[in-house]
Length: 84
Image 1 (cartoon, rainbow, N blue to C red):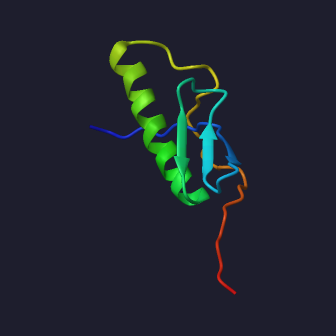
Image 2: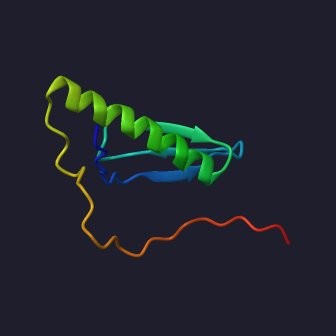
């Protein structure tokens, strides 16, 4: 089975208790929480994969904002935690 990659926009916010919460305006049902931004992104990717696979298995069209990436992905910012 070939893998197909999709781009999903997410928002990550820091919660009062220190954890992070990821949601998506483009993929309803995507909610992920983690202790770090990296962990939250990893969980969000897994949730998004399962949601997209469900759309495909049911024969439902994907939300129009869920797209396959172009050959050149835009410049993105990644969090890098450094102990000083």
